[in-house]
Length: 287
Ligand SMILES: Cc1cc2nc3c(=O)[nH]c(=O)nc-3n(C[C@H](O)[C@H](O)[C@H](O)COP(=O)(O)OP(=O)(O)OC[C@H]3O[C@@H](n4cnc5c(N)ncnc54)[C@H](O)[C@@H]3O)c2cc1C
Image (tube, rainbow, N blue to C red; front, top):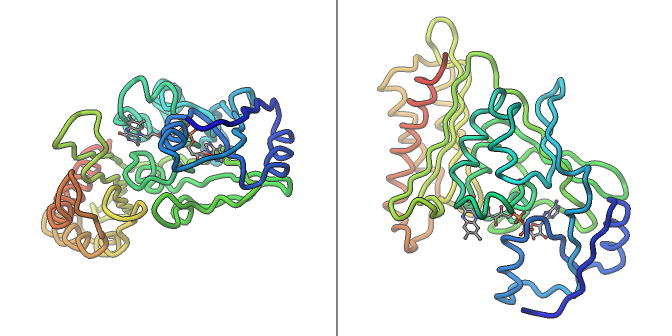
C-alpha cells in the first residue's frame, strides 16, 4: 500500500477546504471497497484521503413530496433494510440485495458505487430506470444531474473537481407500474452480472403500454438506456409479439466487451433475452 495521510472531516465545509487545499493529490473515501483496492494496485496514488464517515448528515433516507432522498453515505445494507425503500421503491431493495456479499454490502455506499463508475455495477440500471438524479455539492452550492447523464465513459462520471456526491433523489414509482431487476449470473452468485437489465413498465386501462424504461448494465462502457426498444413499445399493446420485437432492438444499443464472463456476441444475445424477460416480469408484477 502507498503512503498517504488520512483526514476525517466532520462537516462538508471541511471537506471542501481539504479538496481545495490538496486538489488532484487527494481522493474522497466512503466505504473504501473500491478505492482501497485501486490504491493497493497503484491505480490511484493519492497523498491524502478524505474519509466521509464522520459526516452524519450524509447517511439518512427520507421521504419527500418529490420522492426518496438517499444520503450518499448510506450503505447498501442500510438501503436493503430500510422500510421506506421497501415500501416505496422495492426495485431498489431488490437490486442492492443482488450486489456481491453481505461483507461488501455492509461497507459499500450508494454514492461510492456511483462515483466509481464501473459499468458492471448493479445499482445504475435500476436507478436510471427509476429516473433518479445525483446531487453534487460544492462551495458554490448544489448541482442536480440526472443519472442518465451522469456516467460519461468507463469509470468516468460527471463529478467535477471540488464536488462531493451528497445524495441521490429517486422519484416514487408511478402508480400502476411494475418493475424488476434481472442479473444474469452464469458463474457464481457473488459475481458481477454478465448482463443485467432493469425495467419499469406502466400500462393504460386498455392494456397498452403507457410508459416503459429499459436500462442495461455490463454491456457497454456505461449503463445503457435502450430508448429504441422503449419507443417501439410505448403506446402499443403489450403482446408477446410486440415485447419480442422491442427486445430485439436492444441488440443494436449494446456494445459489450469479450471477457471471461462471455464473448461480446453471447452477451449481445443475452441482452435481448434478458430485456424481454425483464419487460415480461415487470408487467406480471403490476398489481
Ligand atoms: C469483492 C467485490 C465484489 C463486488 N461485487 C459487486 C457486485 O456484484 N455488484 C456491484 O454493483 N458492485 C460490486 N462491487 C463494487 C462495490 O459495489 C463498489 O466497490 C462500491 O459500491 C463502492 O462504494 P464505496 O462506498 O466502497 O466507495 P469508495 O471505494 O469509498 O469510493 C469509490 C470511488 O468513489 C469516490 N467517492 C466515494 N464517495 C464519494 C462521494 N460521496 N462523492 C464523491 N466521490 C466519492 C471515491 O473517491 C472513489 O473514487 C464489488 C466490490 C468488491 C470489492
